[in-house]
Amino acid sequence: MSDRSSFRMNRRALVGSALAGTAALSVVGRPSRAFAAPAYLRQGGDVTLEVWGGVPAENGPQELVDAFMAANPSIKVNYTRYVNDDTGNTQLDTALQGGTPIDVFFTYAVTRLGQRIKAGAAADLTPYVTADSDINAWVTETDGIFTSDGTYFSLPTTQEPNFVFVNKDKLEAAGATLPEAGWTIDEFLTLSETLTKDGAFGAYIPPDSARMQLGPDYWYKEGATESNFDDPAFRENIQRHRDMIDNGTAFPWTDVLAQNLRAYAQTPFLTEQTMLWLNSSYSLRFISDKEQYPHEFVTTFAPSPVPAGVDNPWNGGGINNWLQMKEGTANPDAAWTLIRFWLVEGAQYMLKAGKIPAFPGTDENTVVEGILGPDREELYDVEAYRTVVFDPGIRLVTDTITTGSAEIAKIVEGLSDRCLIGEIEVDEWVSEAKSQADAAIAGAS
Image 1: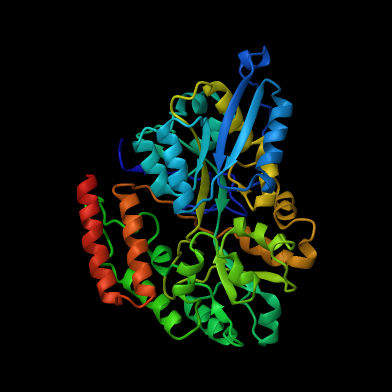
Image 2: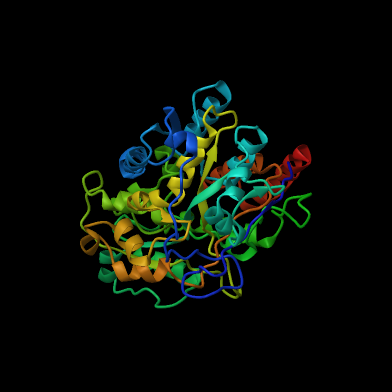
């Protein structure tokens, strides 16, 4: 399997206007025809599918599964939730390797996507994709669909641009305002300082300026034979985060590790320990859950700030939530029927989980109302969300190289943890990231 994968973005279905680079997909216009289930399913022959995903069943998957079973009475679906963190992903990998019954599963990071494909856990979806005119047209016209040597082992269900969640009440109390158009990371730092008061931190973390500046595959130099961590953008990025922690304007990393907040960091924002939170729409389900996370403030939104002087920066978010069929499933046709339903008709049920559909077909108002929920006017600055999420200038970034990527991800995470708690200095982070990642690439080549 090649370590370089291809990505394409839909040029005619962009939000607002056509862009010159990777951008957010449009969600307007419905598929022209319904999908016909395979003949043997229409004629009987009951099957059971086991699906593993990272979203709690009550946040959309169970409603989707119920609707699917109503439309396909001969297929029973059981949904198992795994937490999308290191422990949960290890649980899924163990299940995939150990013979646990799984037919369809989700992967949420390209590093793990490549790893699972190489391990032989994912089935080839290409025959199903090419035989389905609607799906084939979508993947053909879309940048961002991961393939390996032209083979489809996964399909993305969600697009996830990054933006800033803001405590509007604290913003107004501080006499501060958000920019109407683009803003820089320096302005983000200034606002973080302004909002740092009364024992609270201005920001959870700063934006990843290296990602915004360097774009896809930023861990690798051209040719992917060595790592790129000696690029000054990486040093600048980790130094900024360390400085913010040291001067008290960003959330302490010791607390991140102690509270296991790396994957899900909603608690500091919703308990008003942090005022600015850079994230994607999937985290809105926590804000909407006032029973588990009671709070009184309104959340408004700002675009992701960009590095000063960088022309046409990348957003940092991408298309995601990759749906895969397990290699060796006893029911591949039924599994494909579910995958297709999840992408198309079922997308509406995942809005409550903050999942903007990757497959075009859901109109903008439906997305906004479905994601922000029935209490949206109470909880959110609705128009700010609409403006930020459907900005036609967004350039989503998704990596295409997986050479040693799983190992590099662990290297970067470990070194960053040590640097952000003050165990090593930034220069050591740079030198160790470079040397260890080079070794990972060499070992995987």
